Length: 458
Ligand code: F0G
Image 1 (cartoon, rainbow, N blue to C red):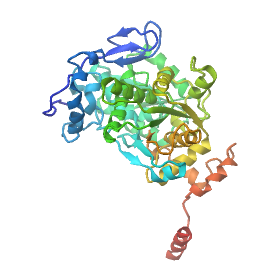
Image 2 (image 1 turned 90 degrees about the horizontal axis):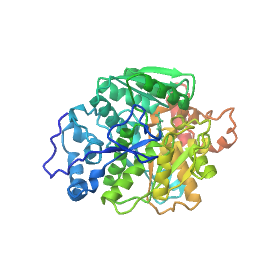
Image 3 (image 1 turned 90 degrees about the vertical axis):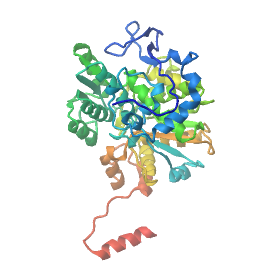
Image 4 (image 1 turned 180 degrees about the vertical axis):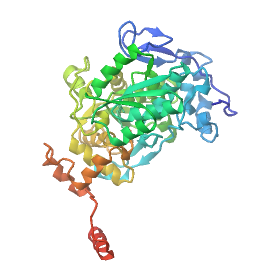
């Protein structure tokens, strides 16, 4: 892919470094595990050159225009909603290595029905599920997979609750690399599994949970030349950062009051937070939104880490939730996420399975839809509103991370009314009946259909 962009003056892309979030050590290159060789903590990518006089900071005004202009360019690199922002991404020595499926460029939708029911004046969702493989993972994968290809890897690998595996398998296939997927047996949606298979991944269903798959994969990457594409890979977070830039561009650079994100392995909240902090550092925005993270009650390690351990050490949990994407008990990026919460004055909250199901149906009823893990954002917002942490007249953006069609079984069971049958939530779930729209089985006659329409017209 060739990078021959636009006529506007081009702010220079300056080289990046790996920075350990634990001991602060700097390095040019990451190890196979993407952990600091000195202290074992996670790495992040920093851009020391931004502060220099001829760096990006000196060229801010043309930057917003350049990013916008690229949307009308027909170069593949410009059509990507990620690489469009390449001045704030690590520089890829050879732009021919870029693997892109035209990711990013996702819509911000107003959610009037959700706003009304929640008691907000207005509410918006940035739908990251509208990415090529159906989740926000594509925005990070295009960057990390391109670096894997640049470095000459033949194999890439990830452990996944579903979306990462589909995304990685797609980008590997486009980049002519082989992919290895480790998923927890019986715990990911068929839709996601079928994507990984179709894109040609070697897919191993392990008899463990997501956290167990991560453990096995860490050993595999130490023993084979396989490039790790889980979110400990800091290149993934750099790509995921661009959703925040794109969001601000869509809001004409007016900073929202609050951004609400689901929390699983805690990389996405960390990436979005990093983006807002960098934009402020660069002078692209003058204040930060609050970033809050919502988890499922049954997969709440961050909530417990903050409430029970003051954020000092991770409280691991055995994760259990129907929101399979965030069924994670030992999140890798917990320290990065806490840093974001502190820097943006955000908070954490947890929501029940019934609250998630209701929120998902409400987002669906606005004609948008999302997967259960994304719906925690709306369920969490309702709680934050009740607590007074969010006010009804504020601008709130929900980050909808995955597509409605990921978990069709969840949706079907919800509308048929048997999602919670036989579970501890059965009684609480009776309150959901108003939202349920199960399919109606009828004789093949116009009379029967018309009677049904009349019944629903009242
Ligand atoms: N929403 C969706 C749809 C996800 O797929 C995930 C994570 C999250 C939210 C949580 O994001 O981990 O960055 O905090 N999915 C993983 C996967 C881990 O394997 O696809 P996070």
